[in-house]
Length: 390
Image 1: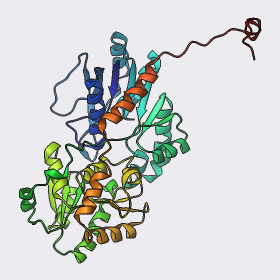
Image 2: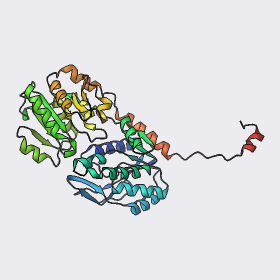
Image 3: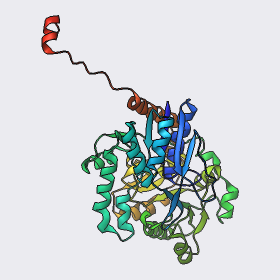
Image 4: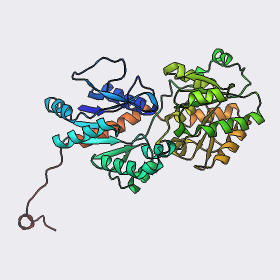
């Protein structure tokens, strides 16, 4: 098939949405499908407009340096897709570019699936704009109702969207690269740069360092852990608008900036405990990456944690919104870290092969692209004459 993929974010940007969409596109291409990628042109990138990729103008997202959204391009997309018509579209993001892609698809009668990757309705509260939440939800509802299917990573999120009035929600599980994220990448030299030896517990956070990630809870949990294990260290991987404030307030924290590929995998494997205090995720890929790296996790009962974290088996899963329980669980876990716990963390996600997800995604798109069955209009009288009427 020729498959159009429209996304506001894509590598070299580093975030869960970009990496998920990239994995889906690469997986489909490896199976012989032709991918028509539509995305914003990032800072410093050359323009591109050929059969494989179109980079459209974009603008930076306020308070999110390095991330951009695409400007509307409905007319340009209609022209492009009239010249080379895709069999099916996957519109991964709900920004201006994604919205214009859905409108172009409707004009051309192209089957299109949408992705639900980001809880923009939750983000509004974290930036002091809670009054916008109903408006954001209405916008998301209008957007996804135009698609033939909306893909989500968990049953819980599917139920939430259906309660919001979004129909035709379908489950597409997430996977993790268990060859890249592997406990064998543990690096004693890297640990030495953090000023620790093999007996020192290292607590890790990976992700955007931003208000919506509820990072004040991570700080409180670590300070409680330090009372039990004073030698513990806290390593932060990532960047964002809250980093400078955290660095200034906590001189003992180690900030490594954004890490990619094998370097990121070494950071995971070289730590001992992963904390994920966010309550604004649709999923949380980092939880799977941590578990694959044999890191026990502490997280709220939502997203990836609800699907894959088993309390007291491979980490601690606490009731959503119970900050005191989160702190208590982290404090308890840092005192009970051992090799069997790490092995159970690894074993719990070893079955999540990316190929299985690509297989599900491919079949879903193929079903959407298939022509609708011809409706027979034979009258009941004619059926009765032929002896087939009931």
